[in-house]
Length: 527
Ligand code: KIV
Ligand code: ZN
Image (tube, rainbow, N blue to C red):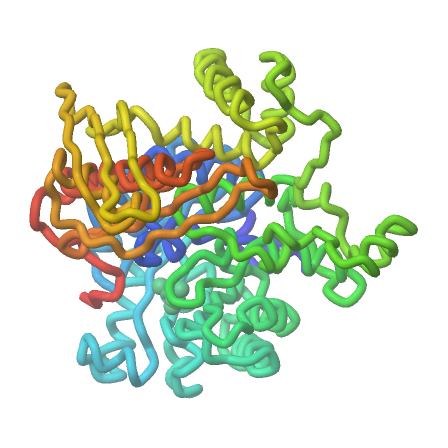
């Protein structure tokens, strides 16, 4: 038995952080990450001190299986967990992927509420038998098994208690209580865990986890209340990424316990100074931007715009700040980068921002930085982050923009001329459209015909000022496959086309990986 899966073996106020950005977060429509991106995020989570990383759902696709296996091989400190539905095939596949980890975990679940029981059409007795069989099977493979009654907060008490007892008897070492549809409220969340621990035989021998969704905006409060009720594992995602209103945000529960340690006397192993970098990387690779007023990681979370606030801040930072920006890794340095800044200054600045680049990557970035500095007087931290992000998504795909010229103005229609590398070939086209972006996208379609529908087109300024870069996010959909692309440039149309081309490159990879029309398995296909 590994150290973190037995209730009596952990310090009574220590809360385990179970990050599911790569499973529940990635399931959010459009948030699909590439193999390399998943590996990068898992590495950062491991480094930050996450106790358990739920790396994916191995039966879902070859891609998910490979990502979970590789994350398991690379993990240094974290336990690596995979998700499996309540059947032997899922559990075997999950074990094949996680078994490479120094500390592997199988997480198996079944929907226990009346709403979820109707899907596999099992009676309560049949479901009880299924839980016994699947948890026993998982435990025969792995000594670290987590079991979840999905939609626990809408499950009848007697049946919930009965299933939890069966799972514990069958060898589950962690019982996770999911609030799958974000239905509970803090007091109820605390009471449910408290009652399970008090009334279910064997409950004091295992760890209880809380897994909350944010449909009513209460995920953080519900998770912390569950901890007050006795849960010692919080399941969460970076930026609260997840379907619908998302999951509990890791940064919120961690910083709440740190900042209000007087009334929330719990500890985690998280190095909070790594939060900001992870938040930015997850936003970029998932294509889900963080709202400016998001707690802890939003652009405005530490900005003090109003006169009264600024005056207070100048006198004493704690007038309006309950946390220090540096505690979450927001580093303000005095070095402003410009066209005279050298390679060493760029390297050191990037290091402060959490990017440790190899020499060849730095050389490539330096050229891009100089080009940007020629167009912009001052290059801010966010410009550099956008530049690193852009460098990571360019030039790796099937398509690459060589040249773009757009004529726009008050006289319609607008026209675009484009040269695009398609595989090994350079192809040209010109097209018209209703506005410069439409014309440029039509030129891409003329060179690379596709039926992908545009689901999202979003522009945001990277920094303040007239010469600010624009970050463009594009999400497209083709036959149920969704792909997101992002790019930044001082020219919004250039950023738009590059973001569109990045999204197409990802779609091409997804087409190849899923082998044409084969649908991927969803964890909601109960089987
Ligand atoms: O929300 C949920 O119920 C889940 C389960 C699979 C644990 O994500
Ligand atoms: Zn969930």
